[in-house]
Length: 324
Image 1 (cartoon, rainbow, N blue to C red):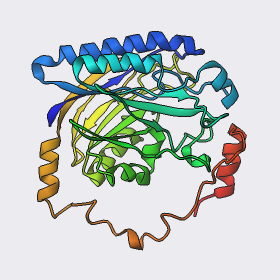
Image 2: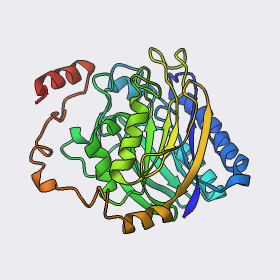
Image 3: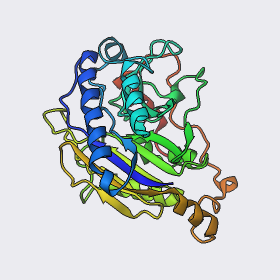
């Protein structure tokens, strides 16, 4: 229950068609090999995490264009390649996000990451909070007939793992859903852009990762997009991929700035479990008082329902909802 995790950030040109995904997967498989073999003298890498948009980004203005040019069903031949690598090394891979189409939800595109272990696909996580108004892929919240668990976790030999994507992490309620199901390692698959990155004055990336770790008494392994501005315009992507312990300590972090980087640190699940059993102070999950949080469950942002999701629709829903 003590192992190394590797947060791997990528710096690929922005793909325009799904045919480009194959080469990206090949590059990420090579990064996995570098992490597992290169750090072997220092420990066993058992968890490898990649960023949001590592396979494809929602660069087109409509879900129809995304489905036509970039989206793929999951699982597929790419996840098969990850499974082969996971089985080879006995590791768990949290893939970079795919744009996903699913016959169960026709006309919708999801932003999806997969947890793949030696025995295959363990869960698919679909982004619940798209970055509005720009992202026009669907949230599970948009679909009244959505039957899959919106916040899945996986019990594994390296601990209970749960994942959420980028903007999801700005919503404490989302990550708490994972923690309340027993997640001991919270995984962030992210494409966080400047200026809300890893350096002051708006170092949201660092602050949020540390806060979600300490408020949920869980490790955080966070891989951020490291693409330079000419690869994923109009934004630049500050990287700063990091690993944080359950008290909010930064255990390791890649230097802020674009570029392909790998950062590793130790995940000690046995120590975490001992601390959670011992502590009566700062036992934050135990000290919650949900009965008095009267407004937390009130409806806010309206689901899209059957309507096609567009940039204009996202802006209109935001204005209609407003702030308390």
